[in-house]
Amino acid sequence: MEAVEMLIKKSILSSLVAHSDETGIRVGGKMFWLHVMSTCMFTYLLHIVKEWLEALKSELSLIKDYTGKLVHDSYASYFNFLSIIHALCGAHIIRELTSQEEIGRQWAVKMKTLLLKLKAN
Image (cartoon, rainbow, N blue to C red; front, top):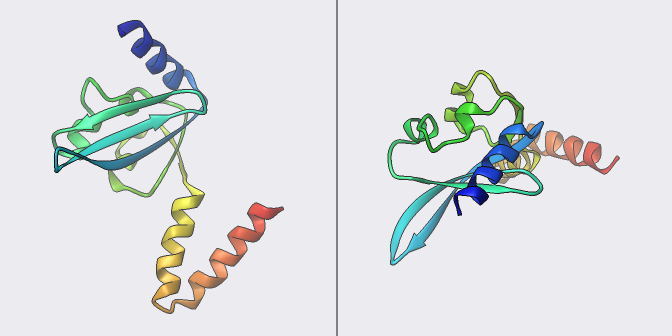
């Protein structure tokens, strides 16, 4: 099992582009958090049991050692890692714009329309 985990870690860390997100899961009625770091071929899950930024800097985390382009939401903790080239996830941007659209912000409608047109081309 360790060989597989090492392969996953090395593959993600050597990738030019990786994706990162966080997700909640319920186990036995309790809520747990996972930090996800992935490429198109590999996924690494880190069980978060402490404060987010502390966990991301821990020895189990990959993000602290990553130096490529990381696509993520705008979660503030990611921006503490200066060796990463940060790229914001388009799906997360659209989700944020939709929430602004729902409360009547017309600029968000225009921006969302523009981004979806760019994606279509």
